[in-house]
Length: 319
Length: 283
Image 1 (spheres, rainbow over the protein chains, first blue to last red):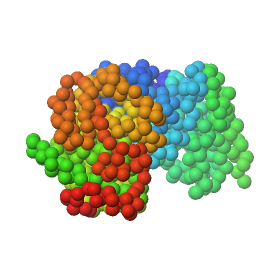
Image 2: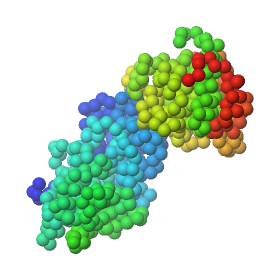
Image 3: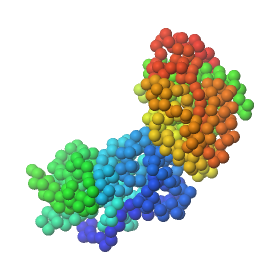
C-alpha cells in the first residue's frame, strides 16, 4: 500500500473473464458456459475450444439462455452465461428474478460491454442501470472488478461461491494495476491507497480513474484514500465506516447512473452509521451516446478531473 | 407402481385430487381451480404411474425423472399430487396460500417445499428450465427423463419459441413436454384473445415430434405418455398436445374460462364435492 500504483500494460476486462472462465473450468468439471451469439466479444473462445461439450451456443435468445442456465443447475452444473450487460439484465430481468434469484439457482451472469466505455455502439448498448437492477434482487451478489487481473480472479472466485452472481465487466483496453496473484474475496473491499482528507470509493473502470485523481489531489496537497469496491453486494460496510470515520467525507465513482448505483449503497451505510458529506461521480439521469470511451467519460463527468473536483467539494462541505 | 397401469385406481386418485383442489381453493378463497381440474389426469399419471423417482427429495434429482411446471398458477393440482405421492404430509394442503406456508400461491423453492425445483408463475419460462435440466442429465450420463407442462395461452409468450427452436437444434430428446390445450385463458377463449392457429403444425415446423391425446381420458393419456417414452431419445424433443377441459369433473366449472382464477363459495363447494368421490380420505 502507498507504493505508487502504475501500469505497464492495458487489457480488456472481458479478456480477464475469458481467462478466468477457462481456468475455473479446468479446476471444476461442473462449470459450463452458455453464450448468446457473442462468443468472440465475451472472449469465451478458449473455453469453448477446450471444453466443447460444456459450451452451449444459445443463439440470439437471452431469455431462453437464463432459463436454460437455471435448469442446468439441477444436477449440479455451475452455468456461466455470457452476453452484453444490457442483454444480461434489462432484457431478461423477469427470467433472472423468477428462475434464478427467487429460485436460488447457482448461475453466474457474466456481463460484458457495460457502461459508457462500450463506446461507439451508443446508448442502446451502454447500459447504466444494471447495477441497480441486479443489487435489488434478493440472493443476488453483484461484482464489478476493476482490471484484467481482478476480473480473472473474480471469475474464478464466483465459481467457488454458492448462489447467483452478477459479474460486470467491459470492452475497452484498460490499465492493469492489481496483483495477478492477489486473493479475491467476495464482499471485501480493497484499500488501494491510504489517505486522510477524503475517501474515494470506486468500482470497475472508475477505480483507475480514482487512482489518477489521487495523484492530482496529492499535488494539491490533499491526501485521498482510495478504496476499490469490487463487490457492490454484499457491500463491505465496515471498510466504508472505518475509512470515513478517519477522513470525514466521501466521493463515490462509478460508470453507472447515480440512481441505484454504488453511490446510493454507500449513502445508506453512511446515513445509518457515520453521516458524512458525499459527492457522486456517476451519470446524471441520462442515456449515453456514440463516441470513444475517453470522450464519453469526459462528457458525462466520469474523468479523473471530475473525481478531483468532487473530492474538493466534499472536503469543503466538512463542517 | 408396476408396469401395468391400473386405470381404475388412477381414476380414484384423480377424484381425490380434484376434491383437494376445490377444498384448497375454497379454504383460502383464492387460487386457480379451472386449469388444475383440467390437468388432474396428467399429474396423477406422471406421479402415480409414469415417473421413476428416488426416495425422498433432493434438488439435484440425479438418476430420477424430473418434472417442471411452467404454468405455475395451477399449483393446487401439483401440491395435491405431491402430497398424495408422499413428498410431504397431506395435512399441509390446508396451509395453501396462507401466511408462513410452504405452499405459496405459485410454486416456489424459497420455503423448501419438497418436489419443487424452480419457481414458476411468470409464464413462458418453464420450458427453458426443463431443457437446461435435460441437458445436464445428458452431461451427467443420466438416462432418466425430464417432463414439463405449459398452458396453451402461455404459447403467446415469445420465450416459449426461443426454447422450442433451441431444443430441436440441440436434439434434446430426453425431454417430454406437454401443453394443457384447453382453449381458454383469463380474458376468454384463446382463439379470441390471440389465436394459436395450427399449434400442431407450429411445433412440428420447429422440429418437434408432436403427439395428441385427450388429457382427461386416463387410459388414452397413459397410452400416449408411454408412447412418448418409447419415441424419446430419437434426436427430437417430444410435445404432447393434451386436449383438456378446463374445470373438468365439476359441472359448473367445466368448459369455461370463468373459473380460471376464482374460488367457489360454500354452496358451490358442497356441489363440487358431491360430484367427486372421496377415495383416499380428505386432508
